[in-house]
Amino acid sequence: MSLNKTFALPRGTADILPEESFLWEEIESKARRICQSYGFREIRTPLYEDVNLFKRSLGQTSDVVNKQLLELASHKDDEGYALRPEGTASIVRSYLENSFDKKEALSKFFYMGPMFRGERPQRGRLRQFHQIGAEAIGPGSLSAFLDAEIISLAMFLLESFGVKKAKLKINSLGSKEDKERISLWLREVFAADKALLCPDCQNRFERNVFRVLDCKNETCKGLVSRIVTKLPLSDEGTRYFECVQEALRMAGIDFEIAPHLVRGLDYYSHTVFEITAQGLGSQDAIGAGGRYSQLIHELGGNLKVDFGAIGFALGIERVLLAVQSSLNDPGFIDAYVVILNKGEAFLKEAFKVSDYLRKAGFKVDLSYLERPVKSQFSQASKLNARFALIIGEDELASGKISVKNMKTSEQELVDRGAVLDYLKKIASLRSQ
Image (cartoon, rainbow, N blue to C red; front, top):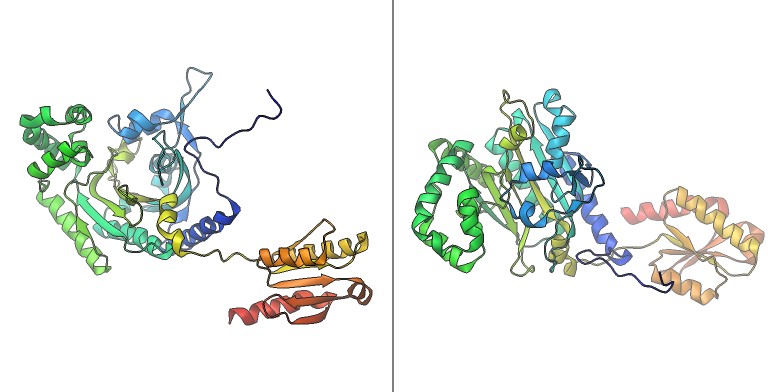
């Protein structure tokens, strides 16, 4: 290999650079705080799983399985793995494997991290992307009010991130029995026009006719709009969906009923929802979710237990596209140590002061190169340092440090041992 060969970023991925990472940190910290306030606990699952976990849970008719699943090469015939395309299947696997189903009536988890799909990269849609999501699983989740809680959490997260005018669309696919009956009904109503459907939908017609409803092909969309105005739910399914709507109104959440919303994964039943936002172009979805109660049984849950499950996922990259134009980097350091004189003794003193303050919780930086004083102050300004801690011959001899307020240019001589208390006092006054 040539020594001067350069390498490029893999297609469909992105570097999160230091000037962008503060946004990620802000979103992640808010998500943790808000999810915990709703009673959700963080769970972290592997980046890859048994490939059959995804094929079984997502459904053989889903585009994720058919077109986008990124499988890993293996040297063993009995092993097959894939990078996770979403979080739900892994969490259900962990829920059952770690016997949460036997320990508690309702388990509430949240997660955040990278997901992987082999889709064509485009603005806001990468092959490695990141999600924040939440899942509520267990017999204790069989309530329409929990549907409203999950949706409320998703909407509140987006509001806290600064997403303006997020729009909620909801629909119901009914119970498992409803889905089976509606599936037959859809085949009947589309039968006469099957030849007009796109090739993908003609394949979906037999395997999962619900997918015809959310096809993006213009001919299919026109056909669906003309034939299907509402899914014929049972009385039980209708009552459940009406209860969800009532709970959302109680929570002050506006919504639109979207009769053709079915979501792209096979495991959904009853409530499904999608959240869109402005500024994302034609692909304006920023998050989605729904109920998937039957998935627990399909992945090995006790057939004698009536499980429920509902969750959602928000795309972090898509959140950033929607909000970053209105956010400014609040990044700063508390202090930058400026060394006035050359020599190891001054660098040692700067190092000791920096290390001491960092371990006390302050953000401190310094230069290990012998740089002109003007350059050091320029670097302090570039890093938005609130203070410059100045060490020169007089300071070293007297055991003091000159503390300069970078905003007001006021400067004060402080005993070396009192610098920590001085900065704590300033920080306390600033927070009042």
